[in-house]
Image (tube, rainbow over all chains, first blue to last red; front, side, top):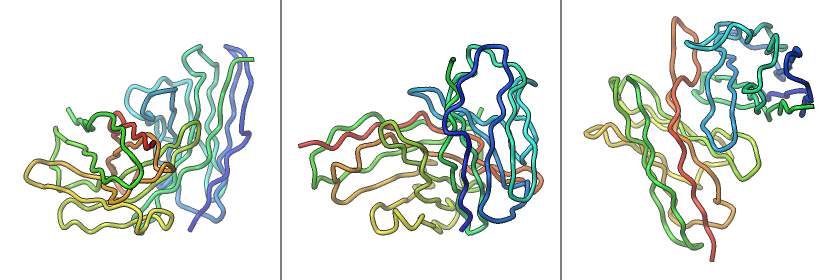
Length: 109
Length: 121
């Protein structure tokens, strides 16, 4: 079973800054099985990126995903006030099941 | 429009049983697996298990095997998460989630709004 590690645990930044979030898999996986989600307090997660790099419908282009094999990255090019939230990566295993990373909290510096 | 609408918040005592629901609409229910996700207070997301509504084939994550039961009712396009004997440690928000796929890419594409379960004596 693949284990996901996210870093950093917390990222303190100011609006307008660039955020780089990492998701590392314990073994090589396919890009088509890696997705990113945003979660705000009291809400369900929202899909941002699927297939490691494809933006979901309605997601602003300041969000981008990249990576392959074991190392994946979510980049927010310029943080807007509504982007301060927790971000999770999610991996699909063909068992079928999913595994979440522990999350990265992006908070206001 | 695809929708997953969950049942309302529950307050239960330890040892009681509970079933929460996730009613779906806007798509063919039997074409997409449905899963359940736990989020304990102040913690991250945990995948509990997933069911194929077509044949009720169910797969549980190891931590949840034997602790909960996932089922569906195809006649009303609903999925369920059930406990036979709740514990205080089951206090959490529970989300249902649809497994989506596009050209071989697999991910969770739709979520329910969540059901808060509180277990307290």
